[in-house]
Amino acid sequence: MRQFKLAFIGCGGISASHLDSYAAHADRVKLVATCDIVSDRAAQAKATYGAAVVFDSVEAAIAGAEWDVAVVCTPTPVREAVVAPLAAAGKHIYIEKPMADSIEEARRMVALCESAGVKMAVDQTYRYYYPFDIARRVIADGCIGQPISIIHRGLDYRQDGGWRPTCKRHTLAVMGVHWVDGFRWMLGSEAREVRALSHSSSAIECVGETDAHVQIAFENGTVVSYVQSFSCPPGGFADTIVVGEAGSLHMNYGGVAFYEQARQDAPAQEWKIDAQGDPHKWAVFRLLDELLTAIETDTQPANSCQDNLRTVSLLEAAWRSADSGTPVALQDGLVV
Image 1 (tube, rainbow, N blue to C red):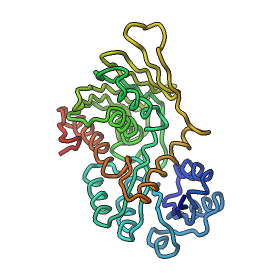
Image 2 (cartoon, rainbow, N blue to C red):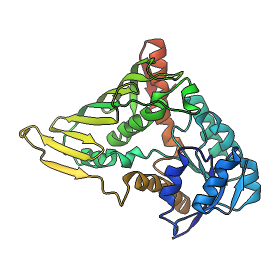
Image 3 (cartoon, rainbow, N blue to C red):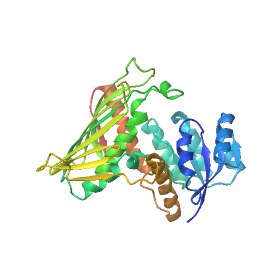
Image 4 (cartoon, rainbow, N blue to C red):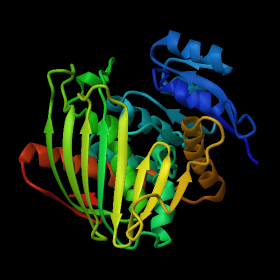
């Protein structure tokens, strides 16, 4: 098994989630460098996780140390400016979600990576942290028959600090990106139309939307009804119901339960997430390892930036629909 050398770019709040997950996999990854424009943050990450060197710019990290993969956890508004020199230097990239806050920026970032011949994967951890991957396998096996509809609720009371509240696009960028990516992954299908309404509650201090109601029509005929709120106390609640021709799946963070149409008093079968230790740390490293395996085998990871264009397209379509009051069509899962 090859060990990859990592440079960590952006050592703010989300960084500990990544670095804690990597610490248990020293045979696979080695943290070589930390980089942040706030030197104290980079130095603290270095001291805590054992990196060799600290840098205050991407250019300095590229020139000053030898490493294979950049883990990019900067604020979303500066991601393109970070990806550009990394791609030009031939560095593979594992980037936090959302890859970008607009489809235009996301397309430019993908083009940069394709032109440079580097791979970029996106940290869509809810494919595994939430039981979307289990449901994907159950649906593919025909357990519930043809999926008809998905009803999803993501309810929270969440006041973010730092840079996030200043962004014009908020709750869908923070949590919606997980759910819409999960719907795509679970169904193995792409969206063809999105309708959305949004609202910014005075209970939460932010520029962008705090609440959204989104409907997504998929190419396989499934219709998603999705509600997201950051203004719903006490918060911390998410569940998903997948209605099929032959039964339904009931999902939450704990796992998946299958209910047959003929027997509704108890689930016919249940599945739990098979995580080793902390499920979130397990999911974070699993997504990174998919990129590392793709580098070794010269393939594209399932969570590639090319794939993620369709996830960003769903967010873009929802924002455009909420702004215009009209549905937004997609072609092959991509917003035009």
